[in-house]
Image 1 (tube, rainbow, N blue to C red):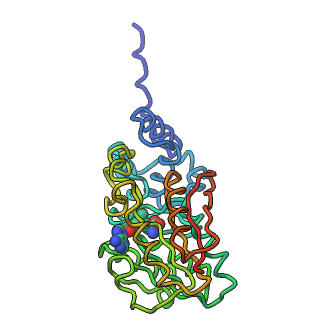
Image 2 (tube, helix red, strand yellow):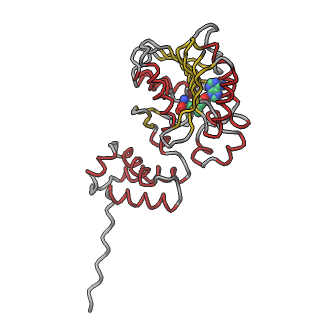
Image 3 (cartoon, rainbow, N blue to C red):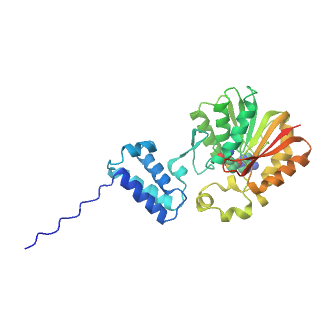
Length: 296
Ligand SMILES: C[S@@+](CC[C@H](N)C(=O)[O-])C[C@H]1O[C@@H](n2cnc3c(N)ncnc32)[C@H](O)[C@@H]1O
């Protein structure tokens, strides 16, 4: 009589095995462009540790609870929920920014605008800055942290987004210098108030392009943060038209845009008559990303 074959050893779900299996699963489901990074961020969230620690703990088994939480997050990720919403945060300008589905997830390309703003304002230690369309507050807060004497007013039309921005300001200890106001673009700013800089990353996706956005964005990020009207230019045009009234002479205007909008926006700034030194700045991918002009 032959002995029965030994029972297959039960798989021990270690950190390393979970990362590999999740990466494969996300690849098979064709979710996003960074399946391994997503797997690591989700598992780091579940284990409450930094990504690097996952490699230190590579052979450690997961608890039942950790496996269940990971399964839930991966399922939501396969339904195109962005990783930043799943873990509730995103890094921006080396700061951890809280995000919820009420706010746009901060994008690396927006750091181009912040870098130019900080470079401009560091020679004006007590600079006053107006940020329109603040969302998570990432621009205002990055400016507040990096310009220790600057005063920033940040405007947002969506109350739930504004609540997130206020939490972020408190987290980064800039509430004394970053003031938030609810309203439509310049409406909450008293007439006659002028700033050293007016900056904005407004909604600039063309209405006709919303349907072709990736599902992560289209299904989960707030439409109010994306939709910029026909050709995506409505809010950009409104800001350009009114900005000179809110800028000191020599003051800086910075507007994030999409590369195809750059020629139109630059021409609009040139023809306005109140701006000089109109330029288009490129982001780290080499794409036209920010319109820059100085008030005469
Ligand atoms: C593209 S998001 C930018 C968020 C953030 N500043 C960033 O860079 O990640 C645009 C934001 O503008 C807000 N918004 C849309 N229309 C607005 C308006 N007319 N006045 C003020 N804020 C507006 C949206 O709610 C959204 O939070």
